[in-house]
Amino acid sequence: MGAVDYAQMALLAAVASLCQNLTGFAFALIFVGAAGALQLMPIADAANVASVLSAVNGFIYLRSHSFEPRWDLLKPMLASGVAGVGVGLALLAWLSGNTLHGLRVVLGVSIIACAVLLLARSKPRATPSPPGVLWGVGLVSGVLGGLFSTAGPPIVYHLYRQPLPPSLIRQCLVALFTVLALVRLIAVALAGALPWHTLVASALALPVVTAVTWWQARHPLQLPVVLVRWLVCTLLLAAGASLLAAAW
Image (tube, rainbow, N blue to C red; front, side, top):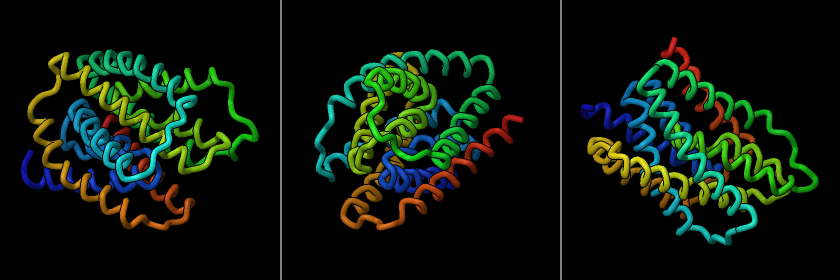
């Protein structure tokens, strides 16, 4: 990667961090999707960088905001999500070794599906979903987290349909994604699949993520929810469509 590539990566990290802090998700979806579409780095490397940056972003966010965990929601999602990360990493190893185009298609479809779900999000339920649904949603999210460090789509759609305040949903999402990112990083490192150049890329982008998150915590943007949703979805659709175009 040259200086221009690193500058583009830092800009992507800033945009992804901004969206993550506004919505509680989308960091890895935007970062990995755009990095893959622009061919800044292999998708597997982009997912590793996203895991590092997402974990750091999550820690800063949780330290900068009051956090009162709802363990009845988090425990089942965390337990099944951690198991799903292992499945996702196994799928990533197979896809990376057998079909690069297939990897781009899977990521592109996942990103576009997330954007569509967010745009078509139905009204919140009058009553909470059965507890068992959390286990299934956590497992699917974990698989996507293991594949691309993009655990967002299933759990975002599910939680935003629950009769819960948006602030609590954001906290649950950030906490869940931070833990899954750490689990993924540990598993990748133990497998010897965390090359030094991804750590260097993460270190170079880290000050940008820290600065954006710190600034937003002290100067929160008061944007309409609908506008935030459309901005994030536009970025996701662009990244997903670019990946599919590159694959074909």
